[in-house]
Image (tube, rainbow, N blue to C red; front, side, top):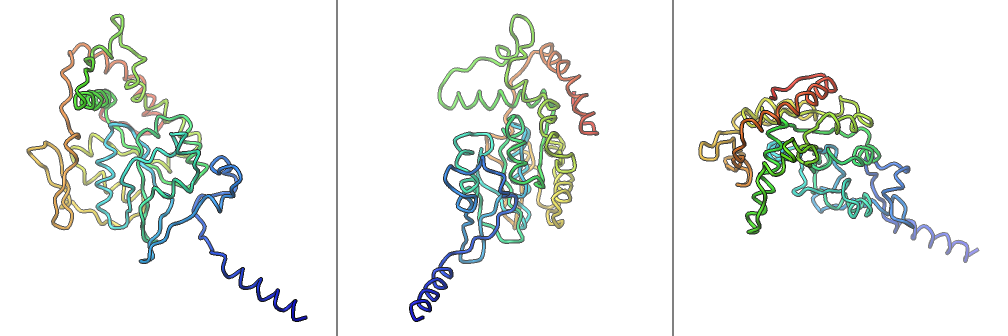
Length: 311
């Protein structure tokens, strides 16, 4: 009898020593693809906790794109809200196999520490144009709220080229002119990747296979540049955040030529790599670019049930 009592006591002690783990939103047992071989989902997802009660949480909102659409500006503006905790870097979890294969535990470790009432946000612009990403995001959390910021497709192509051009210049490497990418055998080069990224209807169709439009808020990137406050107000409402961001948080910097942020008396602007001048393009070639996107734009407008002031 004494031996039985001793065994029972030891069992209770061992059970008390097993740490409990809070459930992670969106982590269903069906997500076997996210779990490394030989590990359970509970082993894979571990929330880090800080002494002040904050913890790392999987994102409840993702800025999915588009590249050169204004994702960094959107994230910085959204970060003005006290109830938003934003990941600093582009995580590339759902589109890079070397990251995705490490599972949700790795993804969670990339998130900022946040309070229970805060919304965790990450942005990776490549998600929008990556075919596998919508299904993977849906598997993590079908109720997630997605932000998509878009610009005039032609302007986005020029911004795309400009970024790569300056990256090469900083490394003292030569880079072809934009005409060499846009034109092939006297015609518009439809194989140019930057063009493909601006075919919004193609990529949107893929996302709508897994998410309804009420789960995706489209931010007008051109309007965000010209007058950011009304666009951010719409984002606050979509994310069900209390209206905390004010018009006074924005001021136009004449030197830089775009809006900067003012937060608690501290002024800050986007990195100097933002807002760079686009290359001069022959007007005839620019018209070809506008004509090329005319029909794809119409298809996108029909798909989302709204129009944008694009060429």
